[in-house]
Length: 196
Image (cartoon, rainbow, N blue to C red; front, side, top):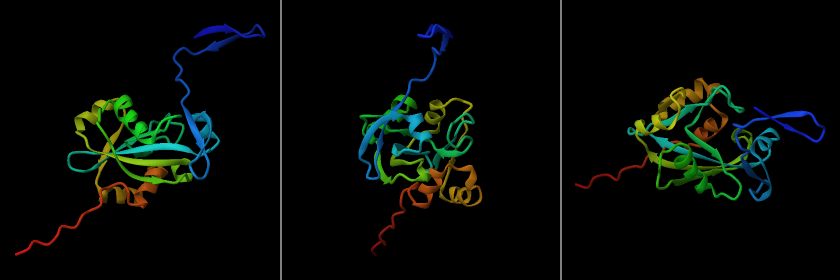
């Protein structure tokens, strides 16, 4: 830590390795921008902003989940959608999803498919959430995208139903909310009967 002089003459510590402030657009109840604020301030004051969640599935179609770190400011130690991020100022939701996958997780996806948008509510941390799917991703790529200490798992529809029913307190409210909206797994399509 280096010390800087402030106008009062006292030394003040500065942190060289501090994380830069992430700025988000604060929005009204209709998702219209009002102002720009640091993400931590927006979350602390429970102000509406925008976020993206990207669904990723393994080769068998199971949904990837990750356990939030114990140091996470929100819902530490709970299971969550594997890929999530706030939409930064002047960024479209799809751009945020691709930034998350390509720049932060190093999964290098060409595109994502829009699934659903949920209104801001307490379950989403007062975020308007744009939900995307990136489809199936190899377990090798997923394991290389996170620290080895990060807990990850895959769940199918029945396994997630059991978690949401019996261990709801182990899941983030957003994960439970999207489960209840039936948005986490592709809709089962009925096959047309075979003609004889």
